[in-house]
Figure (cartoon, rainbow, N blue to C red):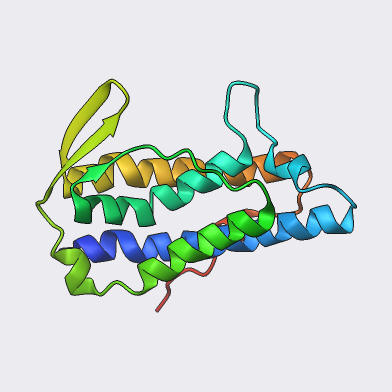
Length: 171
């Protein structure tokens, strides 16, 4: 069985973006129901040297929508523009989800074997599109989703594994 670039990326991005939107909405409701400012959760972090929830959500979008856009453009760089409230973070997630949902299989599959340069201050790495997506962006995507989920769990949000998995693709 062979798998296409589209099949290996976009459906999983969409599944997990939907689930992340779901648990972020629960976080927003938790703050509202408990009369907490958004910053109580949005600025929360698991440990001091890790970045807060708002950064994690930004990276979820950057390593899904941004990864595909990076392959299309031939370059990928870190972003630092972070939303500071649930409404902005949920909107960013929805925007990433909506953009990815518009992509056709042919459009994504045509990105195979393209060159991409990752550029950060003082650092560069060259990839082909598959190496970039499978060894860099997808692992980062799942890392940041897991970290966001764990921050909310740590702060008392009632979410479980099914909230993380979202709607699975079944027969």
